Length: 288
Image (spheres, rainbow, N blue to C red):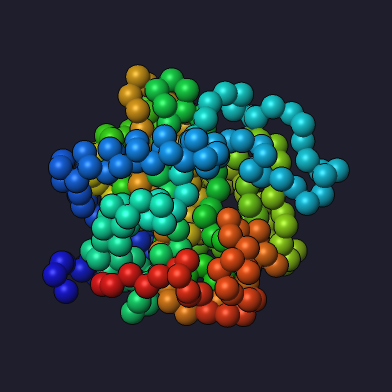
C-alpha cells in the first residue's frame, strides 16, 4: 500500500464509540478543486432538477398515507441541500471518491479485504438557513441485508456546532438497528419488512448516551458506523458548511432491494435481484 493503514487503537476506538477522526486527507489545493467542481455540478444538476433538499417531505413518502403527517417540518425552517453520486456525472470527482487511503480505512473498519462504493453525496447547509437533521442511522435507508458499511464525512469547510456540525451518540451502534427516522418532515418511510423487534429512533440524550460534536477542520475526515445514531443542528452562523460524503460497503454484502427499502435506483437499474451480492457498474470496487 502507498499509505498508512489505521492502527489497532483507532479500530478499537471505532468499534467502541461508533466513529473516529483519522485526520486530514485533502490539502488546500484539493479542497479548492473539490469546491469548484461541486459548484459546477450544482448549477448543472439544478437545471436538470437533480438538486435535492433532505428536508423536502416529497423525498420521504409513507406507504401508508393514513399515517403521513401534513404538519410542517418539526424544525420549522431550513434546508439541507445535497447532490447524489457525483462520480457518475463529474469524472474529475472520481479521484476523490475513489481515494485509496479512504477505501483502505473503510475496509479495515468494516473488516473486509475489499470495499465497493455504495454512493457519494455532496451536501451543505447555507449560512443562517441550513436546517436540522434529526437523529438517525444510515443503515435503515439502504437495501442491504447486513450493515457492512461505513460513511466517510470529509469537511470542505471548518465545521463546528455553530454551523451545523454532526453529533454522534457515542456507542449507540451497539444497540442495533432502528427504523428509518423522519427528518423533521413528519413522514417516516417504512416501506420494508423489518422484524417487529426493530424499534423507532429514541432520543439518545434521554437514553443516556454521551453526545459528541464532530468538529472538523477543512480537509479532515471522520468515519462513522452505519448503525451509530447521529444528527446535526441548524446552521446558525454566517459560515457555509459543505461536505463530501462517501459511503463504502463490504464486497459480497447481500442486496435486498426494494423489499427492504426503495433506494435511489431500482433493482432493474442496478441489475441486482434480492439475494445477490452487491456489485455491477453502480457499485464498483475501489482499489486499495
